[in-house]
Image (cartoon, rainbow, N blue to C red; front, side, top):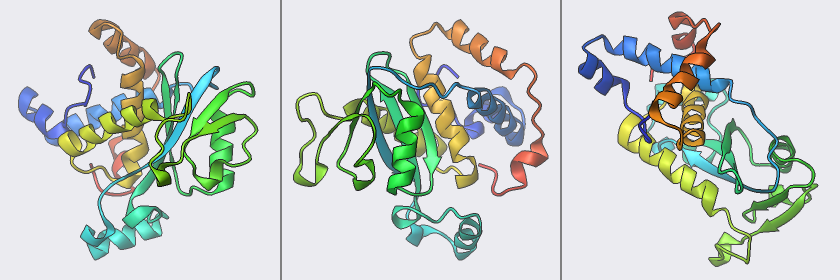
Length: 225
């Protein structure tokens, strides 16, 4: 829990000599704990950005394609899953969510969900952000513009970079059905990064009180990853 990029269930099962499905189930408990992380409406200055997570569609088996298509998860660039994140510049806190479209209704709705009306919002030039009911600054990546005075999304992109290092270097693959749990864990770990290790652990334990998770409920929807 205190490792910035996480630890895989395969490594942990070797370290503590239990079955791999036991450590996988343990991690699902941690994910469930962070699931309760408040989706607060940020004040001040907020950066919002989307990213694409996952492998190329060309590398998927036909069985995997059919499974994801049936679950409505084949959207995105080359079969990747879309995630969107917001970072408060003043507090450094982030909140993340899996989405299935980058149309205007989805992006504008997300902006209103994560920011208060008097917030200054910074985004890239994506068309879906046009017309948001917030003060709005943006940068235009298509012409290699990454900073325009105070307008940039470097903070939330730094979070995406850390998450993807964990994805590729630790997890290697995450089932789309479980992706929101994983990115929620990374967001929770980021938000408590400055706390002492014991405080981080106590925070997770406290969140688990009253939570009941069944293994069969976690695996019935798809691949265990």
